[in-house]
Image (tube, rainbow, N blue to C red; front, side, top):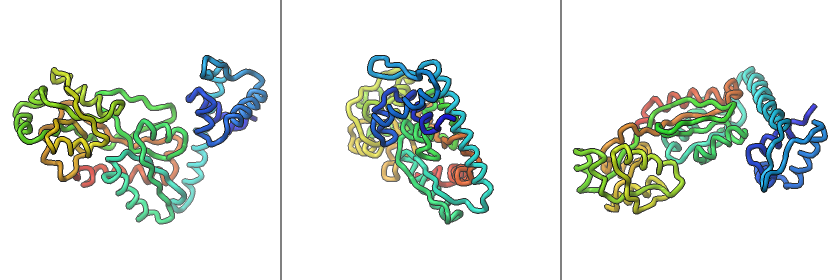
Length: 302
């Protein structure tokens, strides 16, 4: 019978393509990864990888083995969840990943509620963006992730993962004094000649700005970059330009900057999980609690 730990190394190599990346992921040396994969090839009796330039690709036999590995891991977790479901109390450790603006609105209320209802359950919180947290869920580094996706972008989850929509976080235009009333009267096109403030290159929110402006018939003149939505709002406050941000990110002191909502612009907030873990009591309890929190006052708080 094949060793599950070696199968997991092969699966991770399929995704990350280099021994170095796999060794960093698992905290072992590159030579240890290579040795384990050689042993696996001896067990299987055929070559599982081939080198293409600087990366390793799977052979047809390797791809078949990785496909089966995903199902094996899911079956093992389903078994663990089913056993855990027989316990009378919700115990153990639950690790939750969340992006920054969802911490106060969702993650922290969730921790408080779970601690109150299940004192024997330990809840850990990790600050991760969805681009990091979704792979972390798949790799079983975290149990759940509060994630988001913009409404105008398709989202495909890796095999074995599921996601439940919690609520829509509308995108809003922040504008300084003098321009705010013009935007309220004329909509987004009133800001076509303004300087624009966005996140740094590569951030998902930049796409929302470009999409909204394109739909309004112009290209934004990006002059300033912020490292967070809060810093972008501060720039607007001082008159540096306008910005589009999710409403949930706007703090009380900056609420007056909101000029209008962005048509067809929403950040869809949800919770992502491994489908095989749904029977696990701690995971099920966390999802139920998130539904309640998302539908209550926390969702609308500013």
